[in-house]
Image (cartoon, rainbow, N blue to C red; front, top):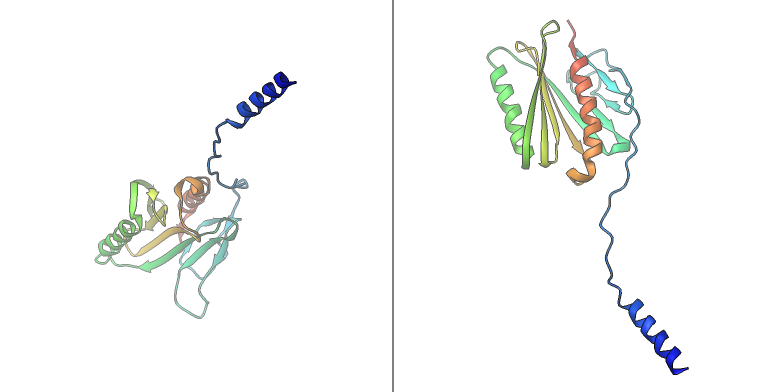
Length: 189
């Protein structure tokens, strides 16, 4: 009897001496649909591009002369803010410099900024895509121009505190949407 009690005590002590290891912190799984695109539903703007079916399109009232457009992704808590400015050959370098300065300001503590150029001479579309790696409230920015009289700029922002690791799948998904926007971009005559 005493021997059985000692064995049970020994087994109990050996089981109670196991080390506790906490589970690592995880992130929610984000299921993203296959990309599908539609024409930008705006006739009064001086440009055209294809937009994701996932995105809502916010535009200024037709009574104003403003020509911006915002693409909102409510399911992804993200928005791409796009602005359009008419420029001249003299003001184009300043518009480009202002865009790069805004990129540097919003890049913050970024590890790296990758720059990709896109060009379609037939449509007079010259674009630069900026991919910001690291801690930045705007991981994707871009500018499109005809290098003569029109300047279009866009920046992606999340409606939450940015965490590059947890948002990486969404950022990659939206990067493909921005590339589609750039490649389908055309100026209206």
